[in-house]
Amino acid sequence: RAFVVSGSFDETIKIWNPLTGACVQTLKGHSSNVNAVTVLYDRSRDGRLSRALCGAGEDGAGDDGCRAFVVSGSDDKTIKIWNPLTGACVQTLKGHSSDVNAVTVLYDRSTSGRLSHALCGAGEDGAGDDGCRAFVVSGSWDKTIKIWNPLTGACVQTLKGHSEPLATDAE
Image 1 (cartoon, rainbow, N blue to C red):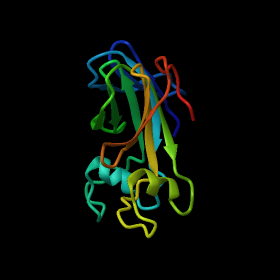
Image 2 (tube, rainbow, N blue to C red; image 1 turned 90 degrees about the vertical axis):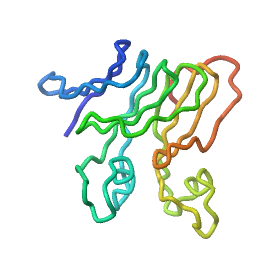
Image 3 (cartoon, one colour; image 1 turned 45 degrees about the vertical axis):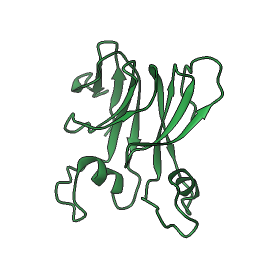
Image 4 (spheres, one colour; image 1 turned 180 degrees about the vertical axis):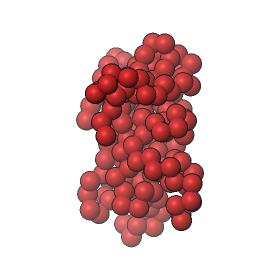
């Protein structure tokens, strides 16, 4: 089912039904303006990301069926990952020293998981592979781009080189 996500200077994220125009969920938790939003899809065959973010067991116990998460970036210097079904913030990513004004998702679509292995430090034999195949990417007024592992909340790469603050996503 389709939905529209918006972030606002009122510190909230809203999820809208585009057919009815109704707001179906309001997400609250940022302490300043919300500048950017995107959707993170769990494209894994086994629902690994969904289980990790929602606390479901390997046997599926506690799985609420959520396979898409809202990601938001804010002037409070954080990125938050939200379960749109419950409205709960399931992960807060911290590490920027200024406002976050861009968020997007980087998917590793390779069959080998080469990008994921490189970003997460897994060996060529796959040792240390946590199975993450989608990464949150954020841009900030601190002039950096950060790549985050949503399974662990860890920043796995910081890209530096801009002389001015970042203004938008790059997919």
